[in-house]
Length: 70
Picture 1 (spheres, rainbow, N blue to C red):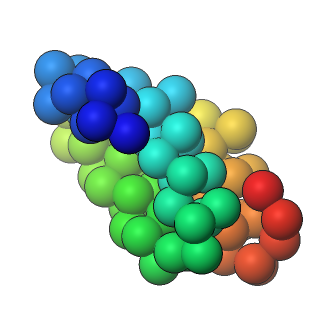
Picture 2: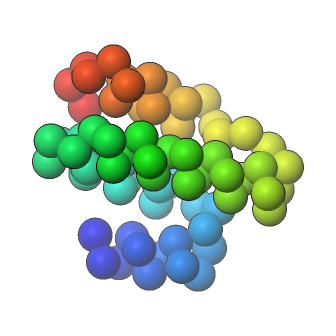
């Protein structure tokens, strides 16, 4: 996870890295952290690029929110 965090420090708009952390947190039984990561991702995208999360990120968010297997 350290490499993903470094990647996000360099480019906080990398949704693939945010999704990787979301999956990792969810699989570790920490869905609250996965949901927080989604919020962080959405905030950066809105502020820096004025866009919303990609469909893949939104679908992952919904799966985590519904406590579905990831």
